[in-house]
Amino acid sequence: MIKAENIYKSFGDQEVLKGITFTFEAGKTNLVIGKSGSGKTVLLKILVGLFKPTSGSVWYDDVDLVTADKDSLRKLRMQVGMLFQGNALFDSMTIEENIRFPLDMFTTRTLKEKTDRVNYCLERVSLAGINKKYPSEISGGMQKRVGIARAIVLNPKYLFCDEPNSGLDPQTSITIDELIQDITRDNNITTVINTHDMNSVMEIGENICLLDKGLLAWEGSKDEVLQDQNETLHEFIFASPFLQKLIESSK
Amino acid sequence: MNLRLFHHFGSFILWLGQIFRKPESHVMYYRETIRQMYDIGIGSFPIVFLISIFIGAVTAVQFYYQMEGTLIPPYYIGYIVRDMELIELAPTITCLVLAGKVGSNMAAELGGMRQKEHIDAMEIMGVNTSAYLVLPKLIAALLMVPVLVCAAALIGILGSYLSSVPAGLFTSADFIKGIRSFFIPYNVFMMFVKAIVFAFILTCVSCYQGYFVKGGSIELGEASTRAVVYSNILILLADYVIALVLTA
Image 1 (cartoon, rainbow over the protein chains, first blue to last red):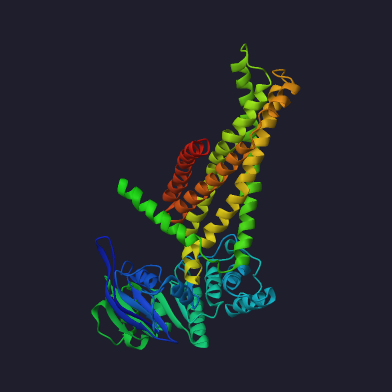
Image 2 (cartoon, chains in turn blue, orange):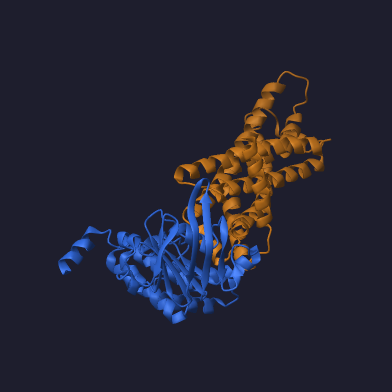
């Protein structure tokens, strides 16, 4: 479980987050949704410790990430996997070297054990056999999956995904969403996904928080999304004219 | 402006403290150091060779021009070229060139990694990125730059011989007599001190500029330029201080 407690964050005069309190539940797919500029990415970067909040706490079970010293922070981060919006795969390394990087850095396993683990992770994301390719030689969707494979290689307790569907076609987006949900369930990890993809919200959103102008505007699950009358939530969900037409025609 | 200078100096010192930490994996750091040694040492040798041989050549020819018609014995040319190469030309010119080649490369590499979120990705994995990305470069530079400087001194002396003796400016015997005259081993020590200090400056300044880059490709270009300019200024300043201290 991760608990964000009264998080404030300012950049100069601009207050980006204004007292966010939310619990990201263990073993569930937790979604942070909201318009562009609502503070989603800043909140995610605070949750993983890349930004320090102006005030507030981030509790990983009983450890406060904000006040943890560097060594505790590094130990905690070894339990964290993250998929970046731009994948952040190392261009000069092969896919195998990319996924093996955390194993090389933090484990004393033999090369065979590491290769086996890399192959397992690649199979897990349905990309077996591309070990020797470079990131530039595979598609954007495949890069996302390699990013997920690298994020799970150390068996993390927490998985963070920043806009995992950005730049992907709808079908590939669904594949990525299902993959993240399967991994969350199979490994019983706490997953936090930062998205504005409505399909993700309706498919995998077990615990959702909606940010609006730096404030927590709504929280609930995918089953509550359509029932709730929260104005900000409706504004966000039914922003697409296509969706509005679809609903009207179904009525 | 002055406050920004203090801010950067302070954050540079704090960042240096992060670099000298216990490595997460000695094997990974070792591999990266070897890769950097190859890049800095072998990768920079052609440009160092080219510059050193021409600097040596021009030095000899211009000394001949200045000494012609004077009472200074011709063999002095070997002595003058040798000591100029050892004390000043080899360490300073080589490191100024390396600041341009290696320093800008380091700044661009780290800046690119920062912009593509590679550094963030490593941080989240738990890697001490300041140490992993900078320490191997620093060790490699501290080992390879003195070797390059030493090679530059020898190549410079060879260049001065090749430009002056076949052209008939001096005899081979005069040149070699000069090279073997008045040799002070302390000058070699001074050359290595300069090489090590300059290697530290060019690596740390360049990596600092790249590591903390913010913004897009224009800012990355500016960081690379700053890396070269600041390294060169600090190398020249350090050159003066070392000259004062070691010749006092």
